Length: 145
Image 1 (cartoon, rainbow, N blue to C red):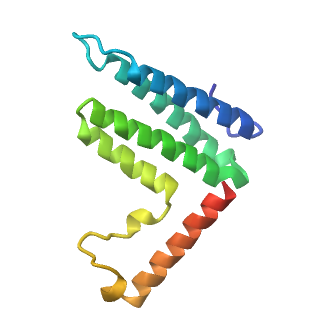
Image 2: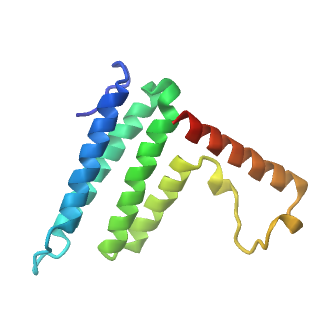
């Protein structure tokens, strides 16, 4: 059930479809793996989640004030795709999913690079202000969702 950005946005239908997609993906993930095709069910779950991501991405322009919520749903699907990537021994496919999940769930977080940082004591005032603004924006997005 693809969303048409021009159609009226129905949050309850989006939530129901999200729940159904995640439940079906989980059901597929826990099915016993066939010996000859051990990842068959996980690939089916991945396809289902990829299709859901496409629907959510298409819904973003028409989501209006619920955009942070739709982004959170997208992040949820991307994180599940990352999990499947590791399950099927494809970390090269999983890592971009996790990066997209982070971008959807915490916009601007990818601009903050904490690698090698031992706290804020050596950060510039500008970097601390940028981090505080990103934290505040994320908190507002979560509150709105």
